[in-house]
Image (cartoon, rainbow, N blue to C red; front, side):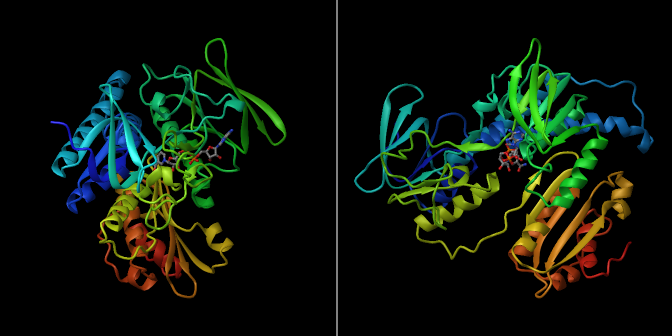
Length: 470
Ligand code: NAD
C-alpha cells in the first residue's frame, strides 16, 4: 500500500540529521515522510564517519603488529588482505544502514526512495519526488526539513577534480581495489588526516599537503604541532603552507605542483586524495524558485533551523558549519521539537570535534588563540600522557591534554587532546562545559584510577599549578 501524500512533516535526506529528525518526529506523534535518493544513513553511515572508522581500525590492528615485541608477544610474518579490509568496512556500513531502516519502521516514518525537489506550495513548499522505481510523487506537509547534506569540494582551476581512478574523493578512497605505493593527500582537515593515517598504517608512502601554515588548522596550534610530530614519527610527510597549484595525471600516477614560500615543487605519487572541504547539496531545493536565503554556500537558519521560507527548515551540513554528524543530530532534535511546539529554550551547546587518526585528536570550546582573540584572559593547563600509569602500561604514551579556564570566573572555556582514545574522553569536557563547570567542579570530580582520563583531571589541576603526578 502506498503511503498517503499529506504529512505533518517531510524530511529531505536520511543522513544523521534527517533520520534523527524522523525518529524524534515519530516520538512526538508527527506523521512523517523521509525522502532519500541513495542509502539510509547518508554519508555518515555509508561513506563517512562509520566506514572510515572500520578502515582505521584495520589499519591500527595491522600497525600495532610493529610493536608486539614491546608487549612480549611475537607472531610469524604479517599481511593484510585489502579486499577483506574494504569488505569489512562496507559490511559495517550496511549493518548500520539496515539499522536506520529498522528505526524508521519503529517510528512509523514513511521512507520514500527517490530524488526530492522543492516547489512552491500554498503554505510550506511542496516536495516533488522522482521515485527510484520510476514515476513521480507530490508530497505536502505543514513543515519541511531540508537535511540534504554535503559532498566533497572540488577545485577545477587547480585540477582538484576526482576521476575515481587516480584522483580520489573520500568516497573513492574508501573502496579502491588495492593500496597504492604512494599517496598525496591534499588538505589536512579531518578527512585528509584520517585517510593519511589509515594508508600510512598499511605502509603506504603518504605526503599531506596543506595550504595553511599548519595541519588540522581548526585545532589548537599546540595540538596541531604535537600531532604533526607524532605523525612524522609514523613516517607521514607534510608540506604545510603549500598551495596545490595544479594536480594532473602523469604516465602512471599523479603529480602535484605546489607553491611554498615563493618556490615551486613537484610531488609525484600513484594516487591523490582531494580533501579540501565540502559543499552543501543545494541542487533542486529551490534556492531561486523559493527565494531561499543562502550565505557562503549554505542555507541561512535561525536558532531553530527555520529558513526565510515559511514552513521550511534546514539542519546539518546544508545549514552550515561545523560539518559534523553530531551537530546535525543535535539540530535535528531541537528543530523537530520546535516544529511540534515542545522545544525548551535553545542554549548553545559546545560541539566537540574528533579526528580518528593514530594518535587521535579531540577538542571542545575555544583554542588558546581564539580565546586570546576574543580578549579573554585564560589559565592554561597541560599534562602529558607519558607520565600516566595506564598510558605507560598500555604503551600509549604519545600526546597531551590542554585545558583553558577563564582566569576570572574559572569557567572551562576549552579543552584539547592528542593521544590514544581521546575521542572517547572529550565528552567529559563537553559535559563539563554544558554544565558550565568551573575548575572547582573538575577538581572535585573523582576520576577512576588507573585510566587515561586522569590526564584530564591533571590538565585541569595544572592550569592552577597543582598537578599531582608531575
Ligand atoms: P576541511 O575544511 O576541514 O579541511 C580542508 C583543508 O584543505 C583545509 O585545512 C584547507 O586549508 C586545505 N586546502 C584547501 N585548498 C587547498 C589547496 N589548494 N592546497 C592545499 N590545501 C588546501 O575539510 P575536510 O577535511 O575535507 O572535511 C570536510 C568536513 O567534514 C569538515 O568540516 C570536517 O570537520 C568534517 N569531517 C569530520 C570528521 C570527523 O569528525 N572525524 C571526519 C571527516 C570529515
